[in-house]
Image 1: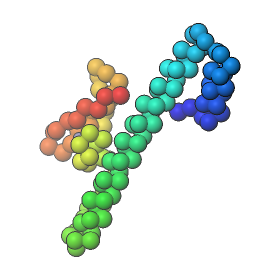
Image 2: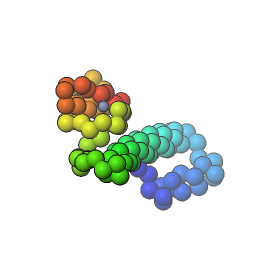
Image 3: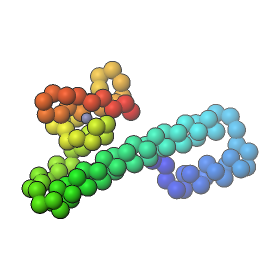
Length: 105
Ligand SMILES: [Zn+2]
């Protein structure tokens, strides 16, 4: 993830008219930074959903098992194991019962 200093430096150099391969490299870095922030946001949303389900069960008086913290970002259910996907840069989340969810990069 880009630091605030790096982002400010890129913005300043663009305003000064920086063009060419350096600018293209920065655009690539900014796009990667955006993808990383979106992944982080999606992960946080899955954790908030899991916490809501847990607290809602407690309010209903049902015994709720503590979440393991291993929440699949695709289906928001708990998973057993996560491993890298061999054919892409994504991850495979394996659930109990064998169901697998592929999450692309
Ligand atoms: Zn899943």
